[in-house]
Each structure stands twice: as structure tokens, then as C-alpha cells.
Length: 132
Image (cartoon, rainbow, N blue to C red; front, side, top):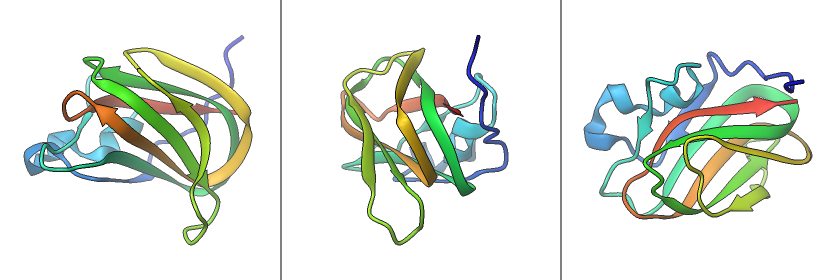
């Protein structure tokens, strides 16, 4: 049985940069529920990240991340409940690939950040999903 997804449609997103400032690669593409759109990071950025504001704190314990072209070599998934809280690491990993799934200790958070620590080139993320 698949876990119950958290509806991310309409969530606010932000990022460290967008490829050539082209709106077709904006961060909102990681939560649009479509696997034919994507966030593409800008080249002139030293650290890559994409952040999701869930609008209110929600509890989740699984995520799936769909990366393009297997560029990411090291990453961490961060969370916080309030905007002025410190980020806490809820998962760390190496490669993501096109169908990455992971379960972790249940977390309650409003803000989620995929922090990409090492990547061969500017990364692309097709979709990020969260599950209860």
C-alpha cells in the first residue's frame, strides 16, 4: 500500500537560483505534480538548494525526489517548523537519481529544504513529494 501523499499544490517555493532566469525552470515546478516540468539551478551559484513552504506545519515520514541526469553527489534534506527556527537535518544522502524514495523518523515541519552539497553540474529536480 502506498503512503498517503501530502498535497503540495500551491505551496510557495524558493531557490538559490534559476537557469538563465527562465520561468520554465522556476522552483515551483518541483511541487506542480507534473513530471514533465523541472527546476534547473543557475550555473553561477556556489550552493544549490530548493525550499518548500507547506503553508502550515505538517507531519511526514517519507519523501520521493525525482532528479534529472544523476548529477547530485551529496545532499541533505532539512526541515523547520517556524521561519526563524534553525534548520535541522532529517536525512542525508549521496546520489538521488530519477526515482529516489526514503523513509525517516516522522517530522512535523512547515519548511522543507533540499540542500545540494555536491553536484557535477547545476542540478535539475523534476518533482519532490512528501508522504505521511
